[in-house]
Length: 294
Image (tube, rainbow, N blue to C red; front, side, top):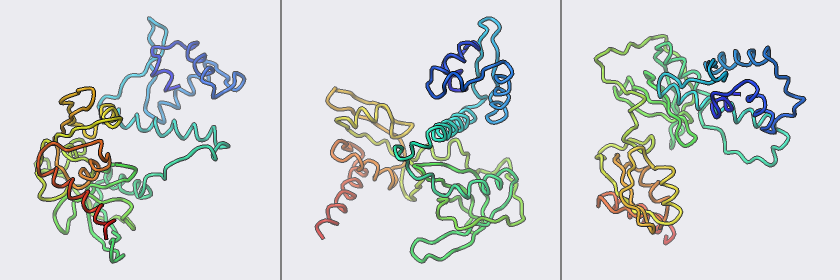
């Protein structure tokens, strides 16, 4: 219902029923549309997603208003995205052998505990797994926000022992407990804002000693079309399009994960400037070659 209304709004009750039946997911006999069930479902939609169906008396059609903020709309889109996929998988569960899925996001078992800590201003104790030693260390943190990037959840929080802001991969967290203490964020304190914290970064890695740069790169082949449709970064600008190649520029901190991303496109992408980023890409490529020469 939500997908159909958003796509064709304002849409009348009769049009809505016809569109849902035409979708092919249900047989006509399976849908018992009536005013009673329609309003029941409308109430469920408002309860689950916070989406209100409005009625336009002029067109006699139903429509949905956008969320009051960009962040809330983004959250709503994600909820609908997740619900939509869950619904399709439920309907076609008997076709599991024909549906290939990536593993679910890592570390999501800790998500509820973190978000509850944020909601109730709880100082949390994290048990972190060390990569090389496999030891578990415990630190107290103030949780700020979480971010999903490349199918992995990350927590941005203040490490109270080291007095600095850190990014913690959730899959490296062995456990989370409440310390029993609360935190208060003073109005004059400079703490990370979720909406802007990663604006100048490619992903979640924040290498120290890296300066923000304008990086220009030349792309050919299908990769050029791919990056026109799905930019590498929000700052991406198309500088030149000759038909044979496209030149893009981005303004960010060229951290190690960004360098690896540039290398991922192989010989279809070439960094033009600055020289420092070109050198990092070349150095990374040489380490790959050296690994095969050894």
